[in-house]
Image (tube, rainbow, N blue to C red; front, side, top):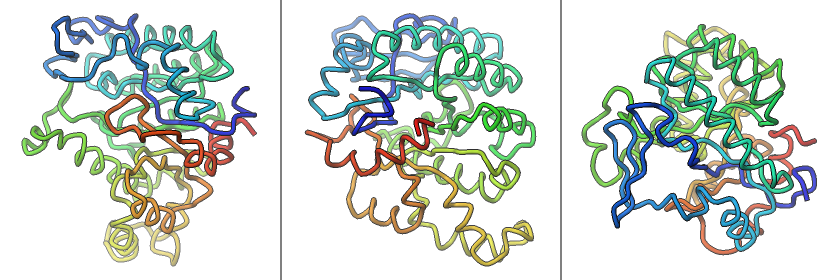
Length: 328
């Protein structure tokens, strides 16, 4: 079995690596040793998620759990708690190098079942390009994986060299949010209870990412760039009508964006994983975006992984995943 021959592919599965503990200096990451699981990043603490002794960190446990879930192949990605997009560039560069080397080493013995996306420090765009190239060409990774908030807007022209590098390397970009305020500016205080930073905040960030990529001209400037946004692009399918109307009517919209069908055409350029938790939400997503650019994802081993055997759910999206991951 390998990526080309897999019948079920999961593109949304985070990994946590023992080698990265303390790799960002004072920011950690640092696992707790108390009876209740704890994970510290800077001043942020995650409670109740067990990393050590779980599929997040142990590849053999991961493969066993994948078998139980009917998943042939999985693409591992950085833990959103440890993007470190806002820390000092030198510390971020060190962390990303250690992370990518460790993740590549972990999956190497299991290349028939596992591959990975790379962590890159987008606060240092030149190094992000360099590390993406190293990860792809030397470590065999499939592309970079970044958060949606890192101190620059996704349409900032300073990111154009990064986007150009991805098209030159012929690899996709995966965007997945992090909880606001881990190592950067604090967000809306209302998100600091009930896990709303994850439940609602992620959806807001994903929707903003989609709008920014389209309204900001990123997809027009980089016609060969493939971007995959997590969780169905947040609320994109629900607010589609409002977004499309704004593209025609608001004064900031470019002349090309004002053309009939232009917003829809650009939206159909984007890729989305279908980890949206409800069948009617998925139906709405299918009706608004390009169904040939939907891929299967699970947040594997996380609190919101789908239960049971997932083969029937995953199989319809396998060919799409192979195209996204350049396996065809």
